[in-house]
Amino acid sequence: MSNLTKKVALVTGGSRGIGAAIAKRLASDGASVAITYAKDATSASAVVKAIEAEGGKALAIQADAADPQAVKAAVEKTVATFGGLDILVNNAGTAIPKPFEETPLDEIDQVININIRGVLAATQAALKHLKTGGRIIMIGSCVGERVVAPGLVAYSATKGAVKMFTQGLAREIGGRGITVNNVQPGPIDTDLNPASGDWAVPQKAATSLGRYGTVDEVAALVSFVASPEASYITGTNLTVDGGTNA
Ligand code: NDP
Image 1 (cartoon, rainbow, N blue to C red):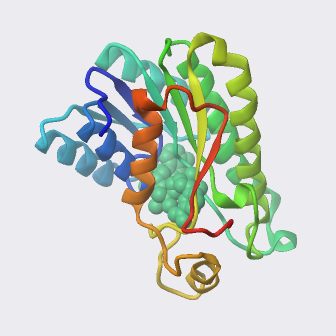
Image 2 (image 1 turned 60 degrees about the horizontal axis):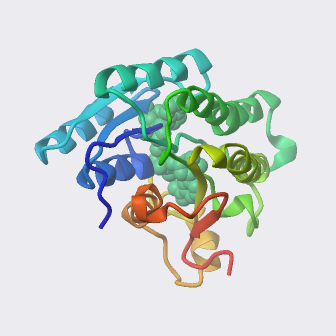
């Protein structure tokens, strides 16, 4: 079990899906947790209430990951509320699955702005506050390393960029005692990628375990990477993909 007592975490896109599970897990590990969301205030509030019901501290902040000023303000509000920042989880992300040649550039811009630009902006803002022992954790994707099906060209390009951002930044800030890692989920049952339906069939078939993963299986890995025990792990891309990339 990790011990995050007295630590402060910010999870972007923490109101639903993988981000909500990460927020709840880090809170149960003892951290005070801020989450951001774009649109769904009701779901964000439910995550805060669930954490508080377990005796934890939580805060929801509306901040579109594609808006660098909003992202910066969310970091500052987290620090002002909880007295610092120890863990940044760059989880907010989106996908618009369709053939590349049929994808309008404005849709590609949206994916790039949330999945890459938002990650860079949040990380820059967080680095002002992170100290020795700090953790930066990206939620990339197994398709950032290998692509097993068509329809995810721009998305996988952004997740490949997240992978190299992780490795480059780990080199640049390792001297400050801050680790930077990339957790790469495979198919996980969420609103973004439901385990039922046509789209799920080839993804499930591509796993070694023959099933979708759960949000808690991703949160468990993030919990470990965030923990003090993971102090010598940095610059890595850790897949939690049921063997999709095996
Ligand atoms: P969901 O769509 O289920 O949840 C997305 C969360 O992010 C919601 O809380 C949503 O809040 C928030 N969000 C969406 N857009 C923005 C934005 N512009 N700014 C701030 N918050 C935003 O997604 P998942 O949980 O499935 O995915 C989370 C991460 O995991 C993403 O980075 C995704 O690429 C990655 N991933 C997911 C996989 C999967 O199979 N599910 C596989 C591999 C990687 P709101 O409702 O308010 O918009």
